[in-house]
Image (cartoon, rainbow, N blue to C red):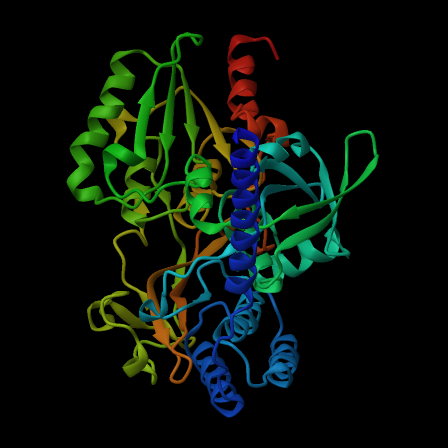
Length: 485
């Protein structure tokens, strides 16, 4: 009797496993409505018109001829297709501008909460190779540190190129895209767009001895990804207490670690808190200040400048120029209210050479807080997630005082960046949304080479260090301060 019941239970278990796999496949393969070709072409034409009229960096990193060729290529690919496929096409179009603040997203009303099944590994880009640093299913943790050399028979170099073309990066660098691949859902989402209906992935892996392993792995249920990702994806923060952290490592004499997770807080409300932070540094006679802006994707320019005033001993420029092609765009009725700034409140000023500039309190020389300026040794930690106002901070700090920078190139540019206001424009037919910046701001004089702030000492975590959450960058700084490096 016991054997009979045991056999029934095993059969039930196998049946449930089969039904679950079938449900996954059906969820990926279910039919979705197709949008009409003519309407989609009209949206593409509308999008092109918006960018040509209002984007401040449309031809900064790519020529007008190249954009025209891409537009014609995308137009030819439009056919009756799903909203997801159309969005991927448009995202590739806007990603070619190389503006990290410019991207296509679904309409807020289109989020359905549907479940999806995704690629089961988190990957990092190292030396143009896709390296596994985390498996979303623990049984595949044995592949941490392995290189992915092919996915579904496509070489990983080709996969990486396609993924990068679908992610909005900045300038000629790929650092911001690679950071998104590593630390956000970007890689997994793009692969889902390419292979939405498959139930498993055929992979070719290479271990650290060069041996090739062929493995077939099932895709991964979306809602479980959230918990696996929780400790890897930076959280959205908007309070001073969450974004500005100071500690005093026991292993370092007369040293402090200042972690700036972002600048998206109200600097006027936080002035006294920031002043108190630097008063404490002075009272403790701190001689080594480690400033960590890794993963700092920016925020308020005012908050950024306020911190710089405690670090740069002489008056300095945070910006040299700002430019917007238009003040009141012709497509204003399509701008989402509440998603950006009210354009009628932006202090535009007509430029002599065409376009508009922004009247700003940060456009002149900015005085330091002389009594509290930190005059000791500064170590600056950066990575590809140092973006927007985060990269402005790094660029301005390195340009105006002696700093030892460690880590990797910033995702944001050294010479300038697209800045707020940021507006959301809804396309008429598909209802997809274009997010774009109104201004481009020059933060460093001279030629814009299209790259970020490059550190003096380059250090990047290996896949195993990412897996174990080890920090080789901070470890290197501590060794330098203690004289063991």
